[in-house]
Length: 280
Image (cartoon, rainbow, N blue to C red; front, side, top):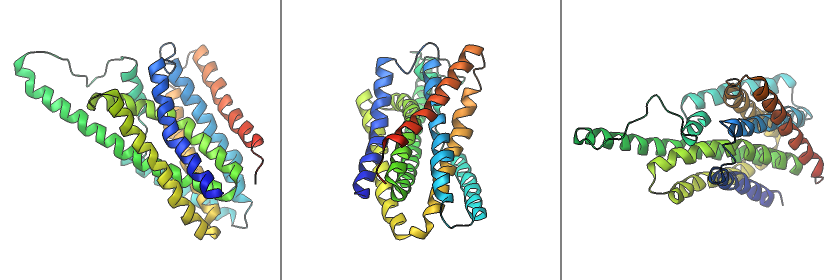
């Protein structure tokens, strides 16, 4: 039962978030006015991640007999670990880069198109850079999704309700992430369908991580509180180091009020899902 729930949830979080991101890009709902739409998504995701970490994952971990100092040490090491992965470009989301392209905003490194033969080699080099950048995105995305799958699995092993909340939080923060990925991949792929297929395959790695995580955590039951602390460190790092800094770039009163509203909405959504799933 737990394994089946883990596979379903990781597929929903991994692939479902990609398709939802593609739908938002196609309908323009992710754009809003200016960049209000993506900002709302980032706020919602940040609220969901923080609520999941502080209201669900960490309390579950601390209900065990493990020493609190050991769990806090694990949390600290986890944050540093994900920081190092971020430095290696394997955990960074790059929302801002993707959204800037999505909304037609100029980039400092943008390349002006011209039919001048003198620029032929420059165009070829630029195309090669975009293709390489696309593979970098997919590699980092796959590693990130595999990690997300393992974190969701550890939550499901602890409690089905906790797993559902963790999967929802992952889905919420992967939607704006995948919107950026799709925009970047469309520049290096032959068509939108190819870009969607590539990102979907990377998202499917979430299920692989979930299966590996399930058997790993199931065999190491004594380490479950530590797995939950690591999951919390991942969610906290993504929220505080990636999502919230982008929200601080829009400080008008109206935008700030919108950010706070959607931040609280993300927290409320996690609370409602937790209250609505009664299976333990």
